[in-house]
Image (spheres, rainbow, N blue to C red):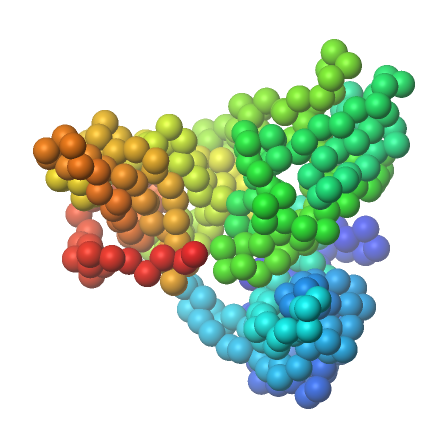
Length: 379
């Protein structure tokens, strides 16, 4: 992971987060991680970076995870783009005294800046955005959060409570505007704070691999104050103009790999419209999957202009054990009585067209999983 050009509040210079690119020979000695970064021998006590929360490793400054975790090691794996990924794995005690296996991605939290340092990279990259105050900040004081999801405040001298689950979802470890998103089901340790007079919401949210990441965002992205009431922000206002915003593209990857690696928060609307957020700028793009798939006797198949959604319902995006996107629907069989639960892999099917700056479908690719009656789905 390489994130450039964001500002840390304690350091006005841009930090290049390059642990996975420039560090090798990673070893763990007690809680000390030792490595060679740019051929420099460096180390860091991971107690400065991680904590144990009820048997889960999470990022926390000076969290002292090793007091309640043991059997820790460094796990090395390959990302889809063939770069190396490093994780800390431990067995950690939960509140009942039981031991749970836990894993946290070091690439998200460690960076080399002449020495090894740690911070929540996701949090740093998001707080870098220029944010402005809104009517919410101008009219509301004594802001707080209770029960993990209820925003409380005194607005225009009136006490107000509002359930944020109505407006915010957790999409792969990031907060996003979503009607009835129910972020509280997979986020914890949520807090409200003020930064430069802007009300900020920070939470620790699970991603698709059940790792928790701390994410922080201006709450006025999700809720409005108008007419003495709080309501969800207009979702349309968050859609960026694809014609002017350039989609990310890595020429070392295929068009399909660019979609799988660089796009996240992938979701389905109205059974057929795929929505994804791509790159560090979270450029929102859409694709009508009716152009890509058909329903053949209750089974999703690749087809140009197949209009699968006419006879399929309850469509969702899920993930296989390799974190590849899958389309999952309940599709009507030819007898028009029975319905079949069916999956199809989006791997190699959804691509970024660099020249047109849009998502497209590729319908001439045959994949080994197309012949499987069942797919290995993450729970």
